[in-house]
Amino acid sequence: SLKANAQRFKSMIATKPVSAETLLVKWTEFVAQHKNLDNLISYGAQLNFFVYHSLDVLSFFAAVIFSVLAVIFVVLRSVLRDAVASARGTLSPR
Image 1 (spheres, rainbow, N blue to C red):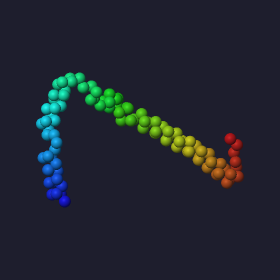
Image 2 (image 1 turned 30 degrees about the vertical axis):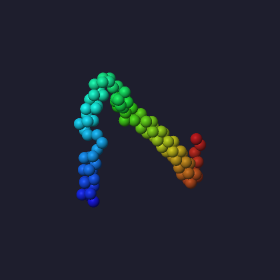
Image 3 (image 1 turned 135 degrees about the vertical axis):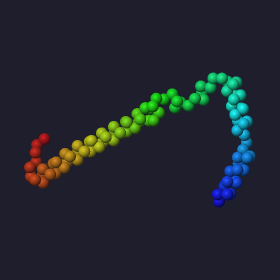
Image 4 (image 1 turned 90 degrees about the horizontal axis):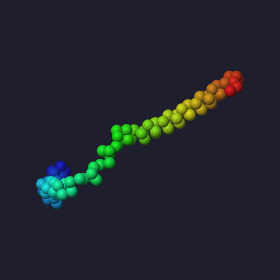
């Protein structure tokens, strides 16, 4: 029930192993001691917009899908043109 879940979360918050204040102090001391923390910067912050949002990959897949659909269209158009021509009895040379 909602009340039981709320009580459970309240108990979990009250008995968490590290308080927010302790965590803040520990991180502040860590940063003060080590100063340069470039290794904690996410690699995504270094990527440009195009790569970060995978637009290069999406554009490649779009090009592949477009190419496959274009080939299917050309083949179907050729097959249907030949089918209609043979049904009429006027098969045209290519």
